[in-house]
Image: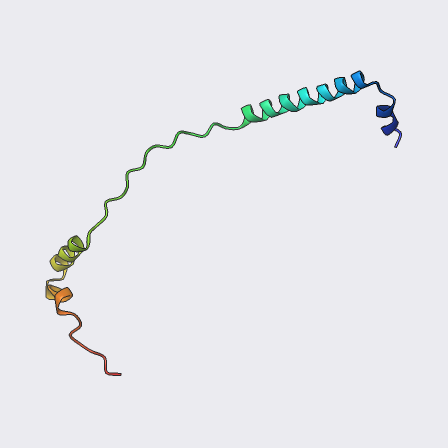
Length: 82
């Protein structure tokens, strides 16, 4: 409680000087904080992965499983009886 009357007994010029000191200290701390942060590396451009089309997937499946060749055209040969 004894520290509060100190500001009331100051002249306007003194209060401005005190405020300016605080402002300079704040700016100095902000600059120091910014310089202390690590610089983010520049991201390299990413190459999008090759997208397989439906036709390419069908050809791949037909090569790996020849007994299923043409299954996409036949539809479901077995029907579930409900």
